[in-house]
Image (cartoon, rainbow over all chains, first blue to last red; front, side, top):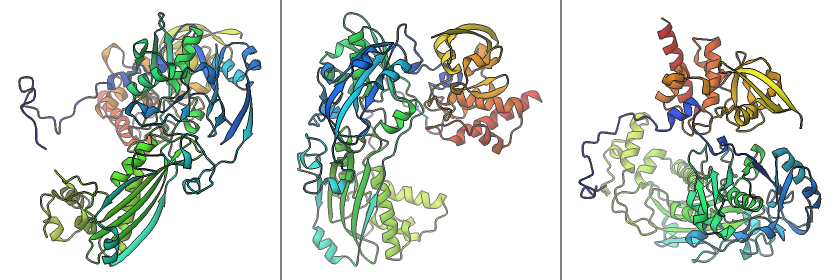
Length: 455
Length: 160
């Protein structure tokens, strides 16, 4: 990497020797003494608690909602339904022009997954809110549901989300993301072996030890301070601003220490409704997921189905790779269209393959909406790709690491999405890995370099 | 809801509060006694983030009624490392990079303290057993186990 040493030259010290030095974490003294303040460590007088009434069905029309009994329950201050939310339909990435808005803050006509928020109950204690929530009567007309990405894409499948006809996300490139490079037909025609395998994964819950939540305090003058454990402060601020139809300067987001997140706290789910509750009651409001909600309601890593077809030569050269990837977004987009798109860019792997054809679909089903989790879109892809690489090596009777040396990209190689490779160090990393793990590879692989392709 | 008086020693200080009957020790400490060091991660006795020491025994404060602690001596992480000197487990976790988000750390510290109070020279297996009720989702258990063992070594050096 070229360092731009002219930038801030007068402010920069060149005698930095950080590598190999231990530096204490700045937040560790607070952690070990129990003094670190997480959002729920603040106390507020007259604090109210919000509990959500959730759909018990995977897919259902809402015929009617009766909150009268809940409103009479001792301790209940306010019951919120869809009509209380100024802009009830949203999507998180609309801020970066990824639309359409496809998810309701509180469901009004229909629920599309089991656990979807329908009514918010605000009461003087958690217990009162919970008891009152149980008294809300929602009349559902249960609809058939779809839980499999391939079934969801079949003609005549149950329609999950009215904003996504056909149950797929519509990119500007069409119903899927594509990468086209070389001539895939010619690649497979010349291959000595072709291996097609299907890989699939389940949703994975991030399970942070601190559950998702926020506490909102009205500051007077129609301003609100929201103490939250979000991992995405400005997504939260801007989405809350859109949903509540309030200018951002009236919303003061206070983040800070997050008690684990792993991507699970990137969505904007608890803050807008809690701010609305604080606005409508004039009192501080706490909305914190129970452990059960965290495990069942918060968006997990998407389930994926990945079909990889590779053409390989007897000498170990990958000559063709065709991948079809399906990302199960669940009922709403959240971050999944982006995850599926990342997959498209990632499926060639860190390998130079001359003929590549990739299609990735973001598919809607009646499952819990999936979203961000540590490298979403590429983590399962890597699992599938590397298992596939091992299988390919076995197929041609080659050592799996040597097989990777042959195909690893080098400086100057053109990637499938037409970005030339620069600053590669994969060969050197694998050489070091071979050394430290005592994995024997032939000398010719130890003589390779990422700087040049040897033949 | 009826409020009941409860008195106990919290980190060496006599404390008396009125709490709603049925209040957990976790809520009493955090909401009325101003000790935020025990954390509520699951409220069902599985994550260990709320661990405190009651009369010398490690307890899950989310499953302990405040009323049942009448007259007890309760220790929490907030009571350790006063006057700027860290308790050895705290120091070892700090030095050993055994904390990331920090949410499980106070519970881990108490689990380790309960172990070292009873077993000053634990084996690695003793440490694993002692913290087995405490879930950590980011640091990973190896640095924590190593930190507890390091704290035990520093204790025995100081004692020697």
